[in-house]
Length: 199
Image 1 (cartoon, rainbow, N blue to C red):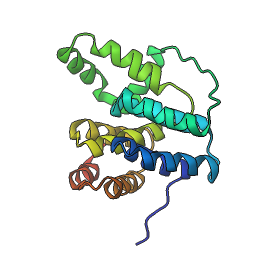
Image 2: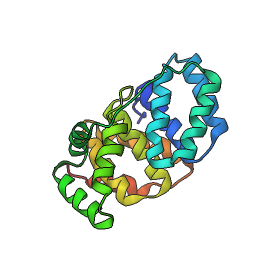
Image 3: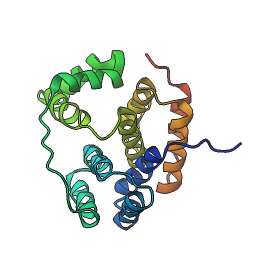
Image 4: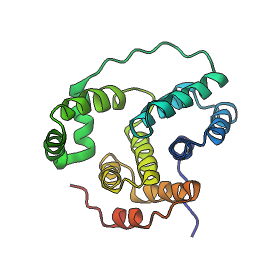
């Protein structure tokens, strides 16, 4: 059976996130160059991939990634983004569905300021940025979390990816590519995806 194709942008999401998660910046730079020159994807797309991945790979990796991008296309246009907690909450609810309130309560138990931090910064500032679709953002989350072995968060985002419109087979393709790129056995991730019900 042949592997179904995913869009060029989504394929880059998988490959770039896998390279960032592995801190393989040489391969990451080559991907950027190919995407910009051969596939003619805009600089903004790559910048947004890197900025979004800062949520899972951290600021140092984001800075390295943006630095590599600046070497290839130095003329970044200034872009200021204020936090929009209301829009952030709507995105969080689209991903977590009826588990949203439970998530916020659990975060508050861990640390009282976490719910407002997540709503203002993670979802209100990063997820609401233009340049990537919510499906592309969920692919980035899945790839990095699978590579990191953070199964609890991964399973939440697998379900979230289904909620925001990704097809099960598209997610399987992303996981298969992640497994190959990162050299990880993701059997439990595939098993979890097969049993997930969206509610």
